[in-house]
Image 1 (spheres, rainbow, N blue to C red):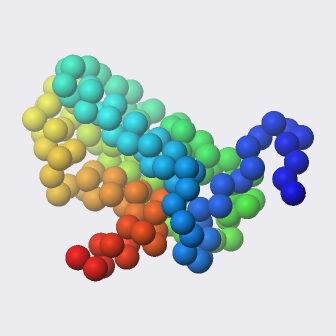
Image 2 (image 1 turned 90 degrees about the horizontal axis):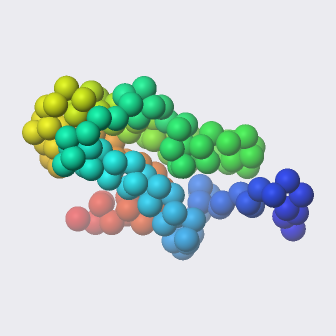
Length: 144
């Protein structure tokens, strides 16, 4: 049984090598990722600016902080799906940094195009969701 001695939440079981049902943990991780994407859309719509360095960091958002947390690495570091999610999440933030650069250069049309169309950003974003829901998303994609 997990003891809450350090007031940390128990590790989230989402990276097993077996099929598992979707839980609120999956949804929360996906929602965290979608929040990052929405920040980019809002910056475009509002003609705002964002910090490129912060946007490019893969450990500065809720999902990234959880992925890079020591307890997460200890519990899931031996699993392929965990490493796949970390890799895909890092690539997403590289692409988000590129979109942020476009936004800050007031190239709003190009930035919006990068978010909405078959681009490196959109593929990286979809890959993060596929890593969070590896069996559900990947099996659905292969059936279509």
